[in-house]
Image 1: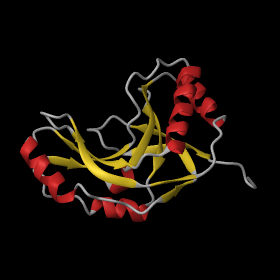
Image 2 (image 1 turned 90 degrees about the horizontal axis):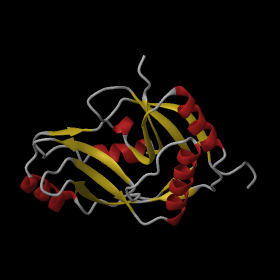
Image 3 (image 1 turned 120 degrees about the vertical axis):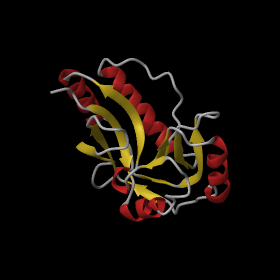
Length: 183
């Protein structure tokens, strides 16, 4: 069977996922992500062989990071003239940036190519193919000031995505707790 597509990320707590799901609608042609599939990607890996997947998984288990809080702040879209994704952004967060760098190191240790794009933490809310830029702009004017309460990040996970039309279902292959007990 083909290897699943892998990526590491942070889960969104159910109560917050429910609030994000409340932003659905009012954007014709958007494919909304199911609330249980909301996440913040730390490092996209893609389709890799079993050995590479195992190496990455092992490298992640060596990542050391204390728990920290994350706040979602503002909505936006990727793909200026042809918007392709609608997302909730993450307020600037040094701990999250540090964790993402550690995941990049784990990816390099697993033999993967260096990630050339800057880390831009976000939660994808919808994917868009033929949504008019003006409709996206209007939606963001109405909803863009979204601000979440902070939530505690106590673990990160390795997800797999089966081949589907994007947006899930994602399966947690392995979970890694942050901080050691008693720290």
